[in-house]
Length: 253
Image (cartoon, rainbow, N blue to C red; front, side, top):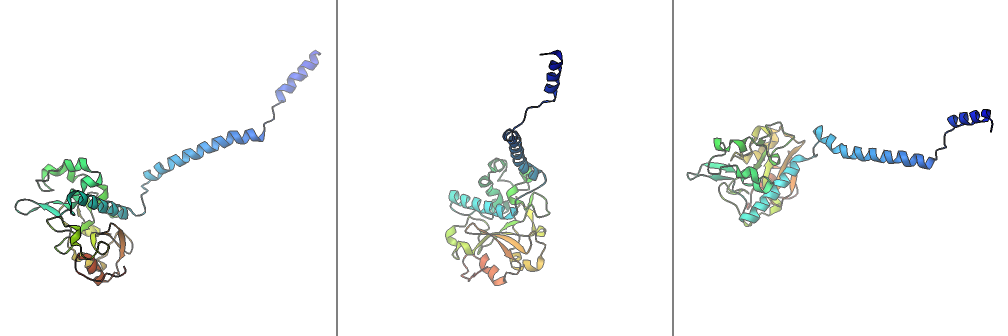
């Protein structure tokens, strides 16, 4: 081969590139695309969390968890918790919400509370400043330590003021009796406070308004279900849902 031919061959090598098959192309870039999709799928939940994304109905989920905690409390103690504990003189000390803490994965917080002293005693300051997510509605503009979840308290209602009520006392049926109702921001209380407001509000909330949810408010029923009831619910139906042994006809709601 002449020197001229060698130069021509080298020039041809510089301009020559191997032909790339389509199969190899899709194999290489397809793998890259799959890896990118996996990374996007993994990062998406974190992105949603950082932007404040949350379940569509946080209150409904909270009340379901509270209802389950009430049932677990009942399994251990044989009754619902009392609306509040009292001292030797009958002064309210702690709310039913505090008594439910061990059944809401809050045993450590519960152990820090001195149940022999009032909820607002300096000895209970750490717990008092702690936010318990189960008791806080994210859609309500209140302090995170405040709650709008109140018990139906009274001699003829689900929560007895000072003693644990047995399920057998609820003669109207579990599905016809309200355990807990969601009030508005104006009537919120600290989650540790042994206060649940006046059940009369449940009868008159149509006029008071200022709800966190469009068209009504949530209630937790004795059977563990949660319902969003309308502001237009008749007073007779509300009253029938409040009592545990009134014998009223609840009907559809």
